[in-house]
Amino acid sequence: MEKQKLPNEQVIMILGIVSYIGCCCTSGFGGLVLSGIGLYLAKKATETYNQNPDTYSIKGVNTWKIVNLVAFILSILTIIYYIYMKVTGKDIEQQEQLEELMRQFSNR
Image 1 (cartoon, rainbow, N blue to C red):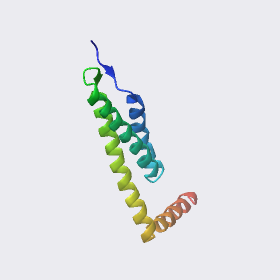
Image 2: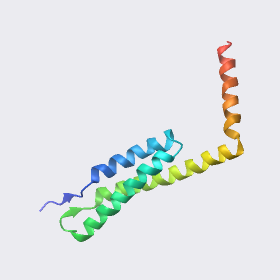
Image 3: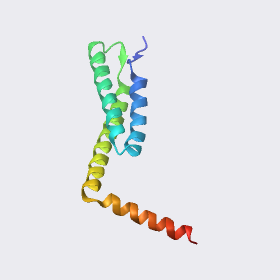
Image 4: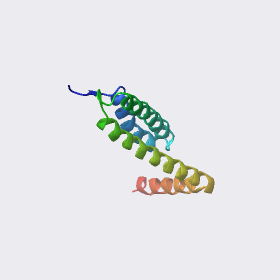
């Protein structure tokens, strides 16, 4: 008998992939939420597998659990960096440097 995929395996996969985009585009907050949901669903899928190991295959869920975990850690690091930049005021300095570069290139 062929083993079935666990419920929500595709959702866990999609959340893992999209959480990388959320990590970069939303200062880490979107990635944190999406990968957190993915980790929660992966935990539920693992519990389902533990109840019926003969029926389901766990390979895909384990892979996407790791992807979600890496995205979660990257999101936390991105949030820490974002907070550091805001607290020290370096984000304003970088914005001013970028505006100066834009002026220099537009004057050419």
